[in-house]
Length: 565
Image (tube, rainbow, N blue to C red; front, side):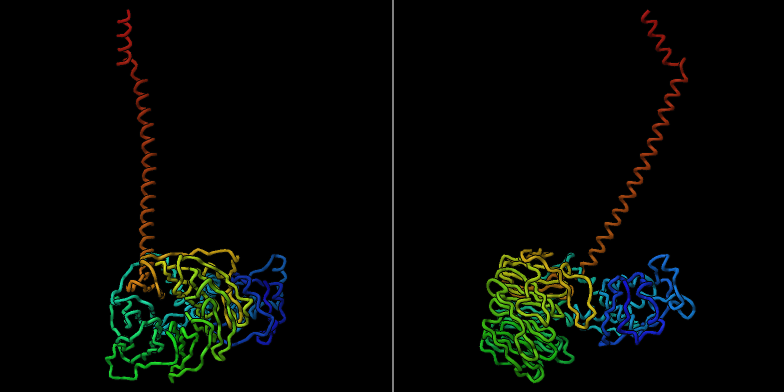
């Protein structure tokens, strides 16, 4: 557990370079893997936190043994003769060391002392932890720092979101939304605006209020089956069997962002994109592009600003699903999965025979390093994807078989993968059980996955029932799951009160346990007092019999003697 400072000697004082830190010093409360800083020169790609200062805390310093602690030299002492501590390092070095910690270790470190708590809480790594898992928070004011009490810090946002992710194992309430006259093929949850968009065989787009469960707007009939919907705070896109993309731009000041009913006078708020030669089956958005996949065996990338096609990615079979992340876009066509470079349009990786039958669904983590596919065989595979991998390197690192029918849709919200199938069930899978703790020091973070044996099948954490059959689409938010299927009903599983219900149940269990312990204690006291009273009464009766020998007993004995005589 030595701290090597070879690559950063220029930023250290002379006393640090001359001291024997490699042999003398251990840090308390910090995991051992943190204390190994790479011998390569450190990169300063990210700005360092200005709130980290050099302070001296002698209680943080520990020694390996008494023999070595006696050999503390003057070079290892501070200006006032006090031993040097972890916080005497320059702020940049402290920041780099904290950057080597993952969220769990950084939280443990904050429990060691008040100073380490302030250092760990203000560290910019919490922003990276949050954005790597869930992306930038939408619909919220970003943290402005400790000087702004009205805003939450990145640590508070991370802890709150991590705590809310546990609600999917708790109790829920169900709500059915009625309005579609035929089967629902596509659902999309826009969490930041608290809106739900649905479409299906009845050729209309319906907008629902997520909190109230009410239909707030209905589009005009588009003349075809709606098979895909995607949206963000600026654009809503829907695609169907007539091979066009129907788009609505957000209107400033509109209570529900989009005027899908066509009431607004502004005719520039909606437009159509033509180019596909077959039904549009999947859609996705990023900050600059629109992605669409079709049964014409192609994926098209569109410019959001100029509304024109930028590039076409050709496949060898019908395209079923696509997900862009970072600089790549993943797609499924037939039974294979593909990964493309967005900027060049080059094919990077092909996963051959990902499923037995068509690979209907696809989803990815926010960083894009975890890829999940669902297929006609009812299986769900997880792959770990990197930028330098080739086709031979990508194998499933985990497999689930939660369904007895084809998996039509997948959605991901860390750490949950949710799937819908033709068997009428929804599966919830927690991927944290497969992730290793730890975080690399590189700028491009990737999840460390525990590889399972090829024949091993992981069990799902929860199954949700309630539909007859054929669930075509599913989406997941921070505390809700939305699903639509052949029945034409939108079903919402609301887990927002799960944690509060669990807290109340735990409080009631604690009260019952406390009352049970009190009754047990009172019963023991009563039993002990009753035993003493019984002993006293027996002793009193014995004394009474021994002290009255001329009384009743002796008279009876005399009478019996006379009778015998």
